[in-house]
Length: 226
Image 1 (cartoon, rainbow, N blue to C red):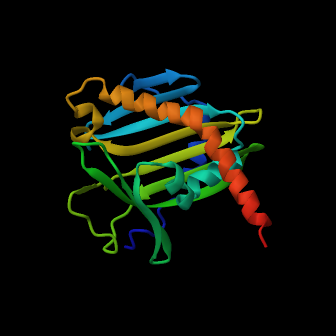
Image 2: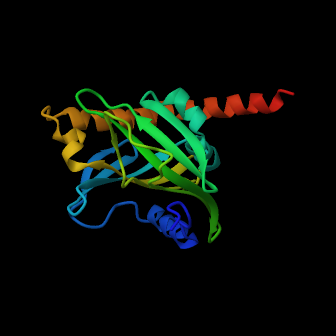
C-alpha cells in the first residue's frame, strides 16, 4: 500500500475542532508544564511507545486566524524566524507533497529529522471558521536516514485555529515528537527542560506578533511588485 495515500479522512479534521471547546486534556496523567500569559502547555508520556505528546492552548492577540495558518504552512518563511531549522523542504512523492525537516538540538543531544505529510482544511463549523492542519510521519526511500541524526518515525501534529472573538486567534495544538529516553527532561540539569519550555513560550508571546505582521507586510509588498 502507498504509505502516503489516504492518510487523513475528513472526519479527522472535524474531530480536532472539538478540542478548541475543551482545551484542558482529560485525565490525571497529563502534566501541566506551563500556565502563563494565556498559554498552557501539557505533556503526557505514552507508556507503550515511550513518546511524549504535547498539547498547547493559547491566545495570540492582534493576529488573525487566516494569517496565522498561512505562516504555519509557509516553510520558506519559517527559515527566516526559526533559528532551530537546519534544513526544511518539500518534495513530490507518488503524487503527494512530502516535507523533510531537520531540527537543531543543543549539545549533547543529536539533531532530529522528520519526514511527514501535512494537509490543511479551512472549515465552517456551525458558523465558526476554523483552520485545521494535520501532519504525520511517513517512511519513504527518497528520504534515507542520516548518520548522526535521529529520525523521528512516529511524529504527529494536530492544529486548530479560530478567532478569539476579537482581533486575535485562539489556538489548540498537539504534537507527538519526543521519545522519553532522548528528551530534554532526561538531561542531568534539572532546570534545563523547564527553562527551555519557558523560552519557547516567551518566543510565542513576544515575537509572535512581529512574525505575523512582518509576514503580512512582506507579502503585501510582494503582491504590489509588477
